[in-house]
Image 1 (spheres, rainbow, N blue to C red):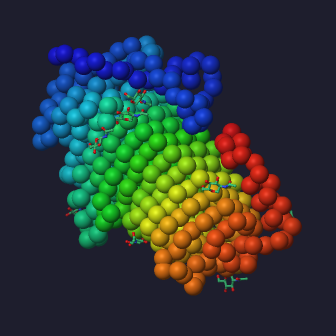
Image 2 (cartoon, rainbow, N blue to C red; image 1 turned 30 degrees about the vertical axis):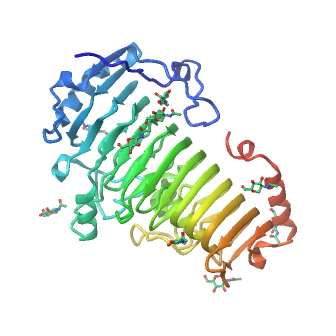
Image 3 (cartoon, rainbow, N blue to C red; image 1 turned 180 degrees about the vertical axis):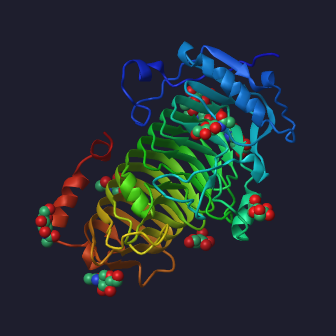
Length: 455
Ligand SMILES: *[C@@H]1O[C@H](CO)[C@@H](O)[C@H](O)[C@H]1NC(C)=O
Ligand SMILES: *[C@@H]1O[C@H](CO)[C@@H](O)[C@H](O)[C@H]1NC(C)=O
Ligand SMILES: *[C@@H]1O[C@H](CO)[C@@H](O)[C@H](O)[C@H]1NC(C)=O
Ligand SMILES: *[C@@H]1O[C@H](CO)[C@@H](O)[C@H](O)[C@H]1NC(C)=O
Ligand SMILES: *[C@@H]1O[C@H](CO)[C@@H](O)[C@H](O)[C@H]1NC(C)=O
Ligand SMILES: *[C@@H]1O[C@H](CO)[C@@H](O)[C@H](O)[C@H]1NC(C)=O
Ligand SMILES: *[C@@H]1O[C@H](CO)[C@@H](O)[C@H](O)[C@H]1NC(C)=O
Ligand SMILES: *[C@@H]1O[C@H](CO)[C@@H](O)[C@H](O)[C@H]1NC(C)=O
Ligand SMILES: *[C@@H]1O[C@H](CO)[C@@H](O)[C@H](O)[C@H]1NC(C)=O
């Protein structure tokens, strides 16, 4: 067949050779070199008619490409067509490239999705006790993996899973589209993701993950669909993406109650910039509620949040332990959002009865600055935990126009913080002149977000 004029992309070998791990930092531009070898999925008997099941073709192709790992890696090329498949595994030093017009379709038959053990940091499936379905495309203990293309599509055909979820007929927790476990130097770019059964991209226990220039969509009514979920992972960069979901667009997590506390792996060093986010029932940008391993050093800038129930939400509850701290969010434009900001210490369920109710989460050092919002119903709702109040919530240069002109635009309890140039005027506990809050906040507000949160 005629090999198209494709640009074969790979995470720069410099990343591997000079020993520096830099996939997760948005500040470095992504250098992509071609892989020295490429094969087409057609060479493994795949049929792109949207009906033939191609799981074995993907598995065989990737098994074959394993032998190139120590020869500079290889590319698996997916040409235009509809490639129906069940779940399959990737390998290290691999680029999966989806040509324009190439659509990977997730099978709607649950028997094509293996059932696997729950994640150790969750102790059980998130939706149901016990195991969970393996994701459509999986990476386990890999390094240097790229999923990219010329706007090819990964379509989970999730409607059957949404119906089973809604009618309580699932036997295991729903699968995701792409999951990387314990992997480093991962890139996902230049693709469209549609109709995930649950999450779209789920890096867990990973380092150096870069998600760039993708579009992600599921219908507003799809139950608990989530865009990108960095989970107990460090050094993650998400940039230039548009995400519209049923539930959260981007959610940062790190494990569930006693399982997440015991596993103890935080989500840290996250940089999110230049993203358009929409979420109908959840939050455009969410932290938690599963956050028992901790979430820290997150920098978010130049974001557009619209048509969402909640704009930016911090969620936790007693029993979680862990922390959410050192978060800086700036340059935010919001439109048509019910609650612009919220932080709640009373949300989320428990995996089982063995959680420790005295494991109190900490929410501290959260900076929100340079925000303009229109058609907002509630400006902010901050309801902390009595035994562990939320502290150092720093608000600066925020202007929200509320519709209707609200009498209760801020709700606050068990929270302290500082604010300057915020309209409408926040509740007194966020205007604190307490030396602690104001000096902590002022030192953070004066430092550049990138310097503080990334590195
Ligand atoms: C996929 O990887 C998992 C490890 O995560 C392994 O247990 C499973 O057998 C692999 N499946 C195939 C088809 O290679
Ligand atoms: C983003 O991806 C699309 C294909 O999905 C491509 O046409 C476009 O050039 C990419 N933009 C950048 C800045 O990489
Ligand atoms: C990418 O493909 C989707 C549909 O698959 C389309 O809606 C979108 O406009 C395309 N984007 C680009 C940059 O070609
Ligand atoms: C759940 O298990 C039951 C009994 O084995 C089966 O009839 C049903 O089809 C399964 N549901 C799904 C969504 O696989
Ligand atoms: C995305 O696609 C554009 C246009 O083809 C290309 O220049 C860029 O290198 C690609 N980026 C990534 C990270 O794949
Ligand atoms: C204002 O935002 C709400 C959602 O919070 C939306 O339902 C409503 O249509 C928006 N109004 C206008 C005029 O856009
Ligand atoms: C306040 O925020 C707006 C909107 O993000 C921004 O344009 C403006 O420069 C900010 N002002 C200051 C003093 O930082
Ligand atoms: C803290 O929250 C509890 C409810 O969780 C509430 O009863 C109490 O009044 C709050 N304390 C303050 C100081 O707002
Ligand atoms: C101020 O901070 C110090 C240490 O960070 C702490 O020990 C003290 O209790 C705080 N005071 C108040 C009033 O929060």
